[in-house]
Amino acid sequence: MVINRSRAIRALLSLGTAVTLVVVGSSVSQAASATPKPGSVCKTVQSIVKAKGKVLTCTLKNKKDKKFIWVASNPIKIAAVFSGSTTDADYTYLGLQALRSAEKRFGATTTYSENVAVPDTERVMHEYLAEGYSVIWTHGSQYYAATVKLAAENPKDTFIAEQDTKPTDAPANVWVLDRNFHLAFYPLGILAANASKSGKIGYIGGATLPFSYSEVHAVEQALADSGSTAKITPVWVGDFNDPVKAQQITSQLISQGNDFILGSLNLGMIGAFGAARAAPAGSVLITAKYTDKTTFAPKAYVTSVIYDFATPLNTILVKTKAGSKGGYVGMDFKEGIKFQAPKNVSAAIAKKATDAVAKIIAGQITVVRNVEKIG
Image 1 (cartoon, helix red, strand yellow):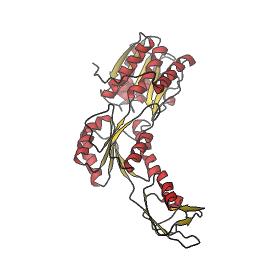
Image 2 (image 1 turned 45 degrees about the horizontal axis):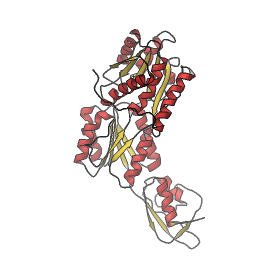
Image 3 (image 1 turned 120 degrees about the horizontal axis):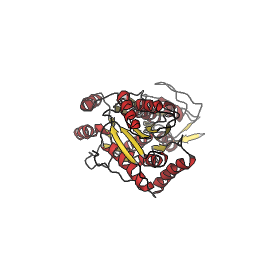
Image 4 (image 1 turned 135 degrees about the vertical axis):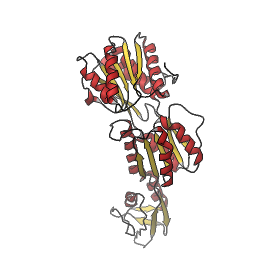
């Protein structure tokens, strides 16, 4: 099989590998695949792709002794700032999985910092810029202000900032990643409206951030749309990663008659699930977000809105490689958000929630993004 120059380039670009091709000759015979080392003979286009960013000078020969020289360009260097631990099986873990996906798809060089406090954000980002990282991703909306500030000071670099609106203050070199948590919480509200026996729904959050307010308001909209008289009581722990406080507050919510708990925490969910397990069997149901958490409380767990950050990160990197420095990428039920099939509720109740998701996708339900402060 003969691969011409344009087809070879297209094959490389389709795999997202940053490779510069310098060609002498017009065709090359495809031979057995091999993973090359610098200066070795490269057998196929695929073998070049496997090299992922190594500097290669490879010679391929066909019957006419045509020579091709491939030089792999510098890979994308991505640094991420995380608010928690990558072992949390939750939000930070999903950030790490997105970086791993970028390594695999783009041959990217990646690094990250865990448990970064907001006051330390600028210092950490400055350090990564000094080390040559040209794409900086801050995984959490609490870092937004620091990110756009540093982006304005470093227009040649690319920044990815998470937010829960479509901001107008983002510099041209900032990609705004919108998590759209209000969309995710609407079907949870539908579940709560139909599954709660007491008509009392508890919401436990971490910090009082706009996205958290939007989640509560989305549940209120779902209750109203369902014709439910149930009431939601929101409480904020003050920390997304404090299981002890989360268990104490969830226990208080349960003791006050809230029989359906909506969790919006990271590691703190361990404590919330502990409170649910301690309650009398069958008396409390609980939901989560980001990842499947069935094993934490199998008899009380209903569902999770599962997030995939690899998909939007890949979208951003493809656009960045194509020359776009910034823009807006929103997550939704078509891309990046998945509603897990509900457990421990009747099939009829589960269907109402999944039907709501389908109607959101079809545009038949519009979930209002309301970030108005509560309390």
